[in-house]
Length: 142
Length: 142
DNA sequence: GGTTATTATTTTGCACACAAAGTAAATATT
DNA sequence: AATATTTACTTTGTGTGCAAAATAATAACC
Image 1 (tube, rainbow over the protein chains, first blue to last red):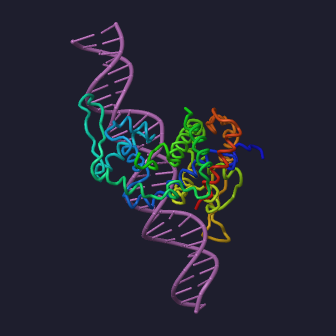
Image 2: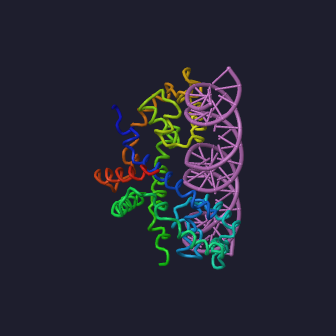
Image 3: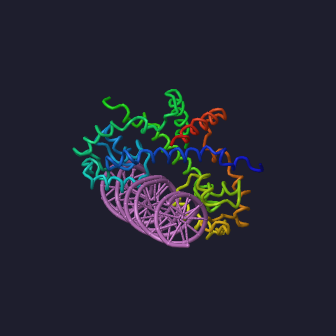
């Protein structure tokens, strides 16, 4: 083969692309029960961990795009999951606060089976830990 | 912590999501030189490997969404990268054929540095092979 | 203290992922 | 052979990723 680096089978990025799409797709059904999309679910997980943070903090924690975040938060506000409050100390900032409905959803989310969560029935715990470590290396890149 | 499975740090899927987005983002600049998006680049790689295949074959090889593929191929046709031909044996099928411009782009694509291609300056070859094997396990899932 | 630069967020425009519904042609059923 | 089913692909609508430009408020500078 003239250019082996152009073979799809040799491309880590294509495997990541497929794996990411596949897992998000597997989440779709359980998340529809909660009336959440996958990025909205990430926002919820960030807020369940720490409520009342700024949008900038949320962007850093979730790695969601800033432009998308505005739209996502607007939709989540419409669903009464959270509210967006001005920071009185610094009026450029917005603070995101969970509403009752958003907090309560946590218990339902915890019931999503781990098999669906990770979609790794073929994978041992050790392999999962290995995968996490390798993905962290990828995510350290600039 | 009440629900450790809801912690973002414990989520393989969130790491996959970040890693996939990051690598595709890293591809953006070199691909802009070729006037390609990342999914269009995947289609090109599939065709450079095997020209003259059907859309169904292309969908299987690339794991791109069917609805998106129609639009992607239309845009690539407009850029004279390929043409879409009816299969005379089975008129439901379409055969995708590279045009001259599409074939020639291969040499430019081969010049994209491996560091950008894989975005893994922190990663040894052995770790890359490990990651590939683990991602293949993920991609075996239903 | 007024101008400039930086930070935090929003807006806009394009491309794609996905589901669901639609179309057209081949195949299966009877 | 007429109907039904399946296959191959397209269309539509919503949500998101991304870059670039816009807005607004704070911080920095002279």
